Image (cartoon, rainbow, N blue to C red; front, side):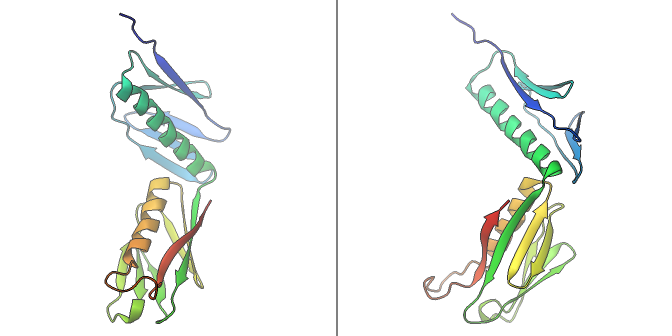
Length: 177
């Protein structure tokens, strides 16, 4: 029987980024900070100079996949605190002019396909939403918060029970940075 060798993945920490490993990993950078708890016990995370090292001793298939997943999450955290994440969305209407307003931690959509009651969308985490004309810009350091806020906006304006070829009103994703 042959035992598999340990798997070791390394992530380089860029200049100006600080990584703190406690019971959760905190990444601080020029745009802010984000933290996340990784609970998978077979993957150990250590810091060596300007490298983060992810290791597992006797890897099974699940351990190998968790190393890749953890590495991707940490890379997204580093990208978030250095560059940030920006999603651009477009407000589209043909029949009824809809109004989109940002209020504290929610976005209010009024007059969507002529409805009398406004629709509300929750802004997740520390994501920031700006409305400029017919464009909605969502920015933040946490990719999951920005993506979930974008998905909430898209889902809130999804049209059900009408012909989608005729009623194309809504708020749609146009680009990601």
